[in-house]
Amino acid sequence: MKLIQKAKGFLFDLDGVFIQSGKTLPGAKETITSLRDLNIPFRFLTNTTTKNRRTLQTSLADIGLQCSEEEIFSAGFSGVQTIRKMGSPPCCFYITENLKTDYSEFKENRDAPKVIIIGDYEDWTFDLLDQAFKHVMNGAEIIALHMGKYYKVDMGLRLDAGCFVAALEFATGKKAQIVGKPNKEFFQCALDHLRLRSEDVVMLGDDLINDVKGAQDIGIPGILVKTGKYHKGMVESSGINPDGFLHSIADLPNILNS
Ligand SMILES: [Mg+2]
Image (cartoon, rainbow, N blue to C red):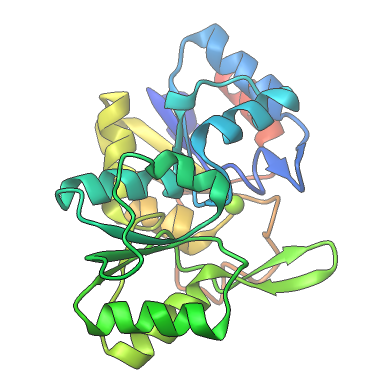
């Protein structure tokens, strides 16, 4: 596949491509080894917001995926850069305690924040949602780390962060700023970090909107990997045309070495 062979760098989705349910997928480790051998840089671009970058990095290392914190671009960490750009206003967080450590430089104000930050968070109650609603009505901006609707766990489907953001948008009429994929700035940050142009890299992911379309929207070829959430008929009904398909990340080392 020409697109892959001429790429000077890669952007990779993590879940459903390299890992699934806390385990590596076939070919994940070999792909990283090949890229290191060939000196081809990459960044993981993930909407995961349950863990901070350090925890994410160590949990990947624990399952044999060696990468540095700097090689992980997570929506959770991208939120930090967004708040910095806003001038580090007082914040109210609706995120996990683990992720909060990435946000320790910001002042937390639960009474009169200028911005509220919502990520993966399972401690919602009526009172907390009502409090967030009042903050927004009093002028606070909404930062959504991502807008996931639901996700799959062993027990079945579970509500995701986007539902709570949508509830607040509905009540207040205010739109949230989404910082994770498919936000263009999120992709641009990773490109800047790689010091590569959009046409020099390729994005590989299992999500049509967040990965493939998100990449294509800033001129990065988007390849759909047929593992993770991929299922038959998903492309045909989407109106999105991936620039290529890969059966699995396990195919990448051979393509790179051919
Ligand atoms: Mg994925």
